[in-house]
Every structure is written in C-alpha cells, then in structure tokens.
Image (cartoon, rainbow, N blue to C red):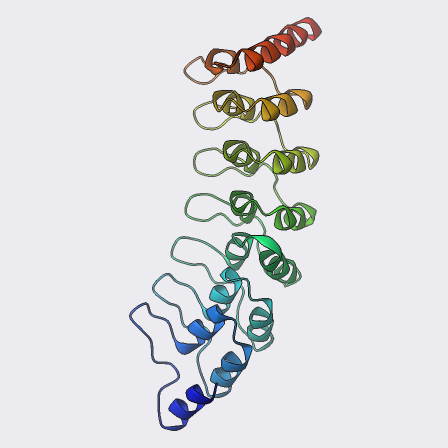
Length: 251
C-alpha cells in the first residue's frame, strides 16, 4: 500500500491502464487487496472502467473469489449490472469459482437487487450451468434455492445443467439437480438425453441414478439411436434392457 501511495502522491494517474485495459483497481481487486482498492477509490479511480474482456473491478474481484473486495466496491457504488464481452454477468463469474470462496461471493450477490439469475452468456449458459461446470456443490445449492431459477435452462446446444453434470461425470451434482426437479428426459439439439449421454460414457452409476428417477430408455436421438444402441458395457446394457422392458409393460 505504501508504494502505491507514494506513486499516486507523486502524480501517477490512478486511472492509467495496462495493455489488458486494467487499472490499478482491477489489479488490486484481483489480488484481494481491500486496502489498496479503498485507497485508489478515495483518490478518484473509476470503478466502472472495463478491461479488454469487458470486466470491471468488481467483476474481477468476483471471479477471483474475494468477497471482502466485492463488498467494498459495491458499498461504494459499483454496479452489478455489467456484462462482459462474452456475455457473462457477475453471477456467471462468481458461479465459476470453486469452493467456499465462490459460494461466499455468490451468496452475497444473490442478496443484491437487479441481478438476473437466469442471464445467458454468449454460449447460452446461465450461472447454474457455470456452477455445474465448476463442480461447486455449495454454489449450485445457492442457485437452486434462489427465487425464479430455471433448473432446465438450455444453452445454445440445448444442454441443461443436468446434461452438463452428466457429461462431466458429477454424480452428486446430478442427484442435486434431479432432486431440485430437473427434467431427466430433456433432449438437446441432436436429441440426446441425459441417460443417453451417461450410457455413451459408460457411467453405470449415472445410468442407474437416472433410470431410478424416471429416465426413458426408448427416447431416441435425431439419428435414431437410443441408450441401448450406444452402450457397450454388458452391465449397462442389461440394466437398460431391464428398465426398457418395465417401461414398455407399464405403458
């Protein structure tokens, strides 16, 4: 802090930017330095300046998991409405941070006004999609508990957060989403369902879990493939056939 103070008192412009378009406030926010951030703001640093990725200082603090800096910047008027060049909001950024740091920032942000919990980025992903990608159980729980969250929101490929969880092999998160009401028979733009993906990936635990929660074995892709046609594991094929026979009988 003392070095920064000396530079500023000697005339350094607090709004000078580096090659990435970042000011000292961006850098201090990313490093988690509340003291430096507070000093730069007091000296007139513009908190709304965007770097070349379209991120403001509070965005950088959020994506770095620094709750204390996020709180300081918002308390001094930083907006939570910014959207980066790839369409990500501050919720997307916080949801992409793993562990308790990301969850802490996310919990605080969800208490703020004007945050759009279902905002889609340039890939069509919501903060829930991003939290699933990060394998952050705590952040997912916060998002699922929030008013108005769309558990079956689709990205540009038609994938829901449940599909992302299955693709990544996250069994616990798959359970978390299914128990929150995620559609186990949703299909993406090519007609693939979650159980189709789990079968293709030879993940017996996920196949069993999805079948136990009502996944249909006879749902086919646009190419006419089903979970039975893509599964090569005899264990998975036997499981699928058993449920297929049961579903046909009950129909």
